[in-house]
Figure 1 (cartoon, rainbow, N blue to C red):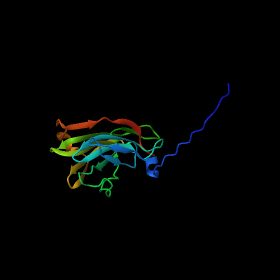
Figure 2 (cartoon, rainbow, N blue to C red):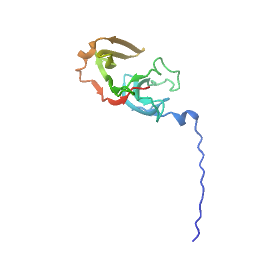
Figure 3 (tube, helix red, strand yellow):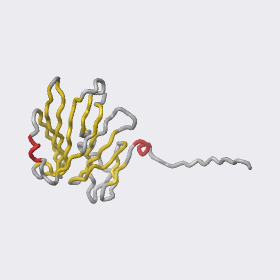
Figure 4 (cartoon, rainbow, N blue to C red):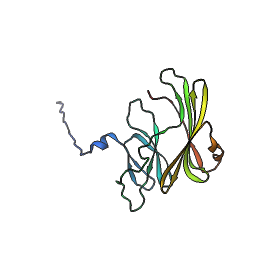
Length: 179
């Protein structure tokens, strides 16, 4: 019996961006192009997609949170990026120093109607400064006019708003800080 080998070559036309980035589909079947890998939809909130992802695979970059506006009916999905489209937010979790392996940051993230009934994302962070822990919070309000940001260091005043039923916590990860 003779063994016959056949080589099949398949060529697909792809754009360079599709080789390196993943797209995301919303619940309304709208495709959002990202410049991210390992992308996943965390939530859709007030016309925005809350996305987890990173810019590379097999690299030192940690998973992060990104916020993208979902195009409304009649808007082009290829429209110019909105302010904040490239902003990178900390993924919740416990982070250790990559050299010493000591815990240096603890971050929790909440999304939903977490601040005075408004669609929002809230990060509550504790980070090591010398021998003590410093608390801070970072609030992003999602409005029709875009994103509004507020940072408070030394306290976490929005903690009182988290008991609402429409406010969810994204489970955290354990990771090393980026070098």
